[in-house]
Image (cartoon, rainbow, N blue to C red; front, side, top):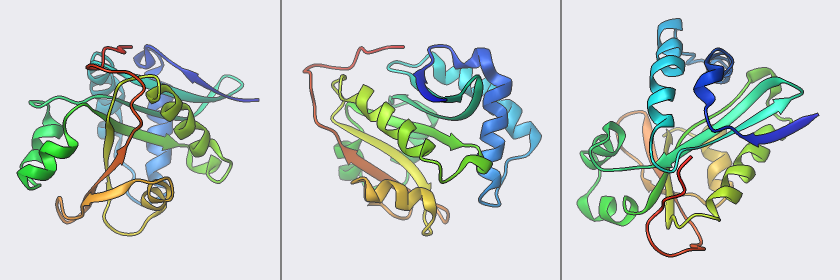
Amino acid sequence: MLTFQRVREPATMATRVAEVYQSAFSAFGDAPGDDEVNRFAHETLPQHERREGFTFVAALDADELVGFIYGYHGRSGEWWEDWISDRVPRAIYEEWFYNQFDLTEFCVRADRHREGIGSGLYDSLLARLAELPYARAVLTTGRIDNPAREFYTRRGWEVVWDALDDRFSLLGLRLPQSQCGSPSGGA
């Protein structure tokens, strides 16, 4: 039976996360190599897990991890925020990178695509964000038309800046704010 659960310490299941991560990207012909997968699961994920507002939702089929989605409250001075800041006009950065949730990773095993797992993960994460005071969410995705980009635009995400580099676009989603103040939702 498929369930969607918030996981507070996903680094404890790093091997399973790595398998899903590698499988998900292999579906699009740009699968990361073993070194990149291991860095993601054993270095990047634990680092992200410590960030403010970190929220990780797992799709589990019985005990098998079949997908995950996560993000956190982005801050200036973090690599991704600074990378974006260097590539978009100041006015766009100031509009989208204040009180935002950075949707960081979204992966479903390649052999489980088209089963509604991605929609379930996305809906679970957005339900959690509705409880937090974020004004917007941001992410990067491929510039070319691809299933991920189509998935987001069908759900109301807009292309904020289409030419971050030769591969990526910045997408944004305005969120209804249910609380006031700055996010302190933590893990």
